Length: 334
Image (tube, rainbow, N blue to C red; front, side, top):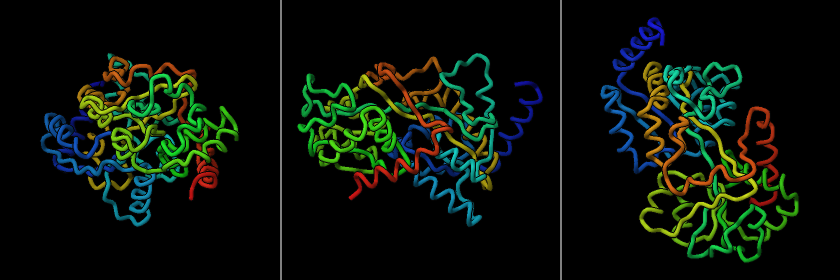
């Protein structure tokens, strides 16, 4: 930072310390039972700012909570964690307060993707961590020779009644699975999957636990996280399979909200995730941090770049979300 920028940021930090609190709506990047790890690291940098975080939310839950507060002008949240599609949705509604975090300007840091994701580069949409979604399997129920090498392998009748899938008719990774699989394999894939007696859910952590327990052999649209790491390290028969055809995911990050009761603390919180401490915590929690020198340290992450294609919805793809979700609901929702 230039001297003027450093002085300005110091004033923001001082104001944030006086505010003393920040309220955050978050995804499952930090599992609820791991909040203590976050608080321990955060308090080393900002002991005067208490973080009130609701974590483990689905993208649609965050959008609903934020829009309800903004419409009513009853502001509670200061910050929301958002992926590309949902952040652009809220940005179009004018509820985000853009900030270009000072930490992303550090010339010594190399990023895997530009942390400033919005096309105008104003800082409304930020990518602190990158998500990649494997196919999860229970190794006691799926033999090595039967591991799915493509998403088309999921249509094999032997998997009938043994697949869980995060709902493809709402925001999240479920509709990515539907869209890409149909793109690759056509309506035939959809028809065959309709015969698979699939179980649909809306909580990725619950799904990972169910696969580990053997309730399902295969899980779709569950991004890996600290829970996956802990289950694997505890000896549970859970494995990430990186298929040959494609992998989907997203970048997500924390965005400050308009009307935030603690606007300076919101800026400090958003920036912190791009510091070394914040990026290290992402890695420690089983994420893929955006810093190029922190590609993810767990064994299950290896091979994420093997598939032929990696896809995440960009601005030009936003128009696909609603019709794809509607189509998936007609095909699978009972």
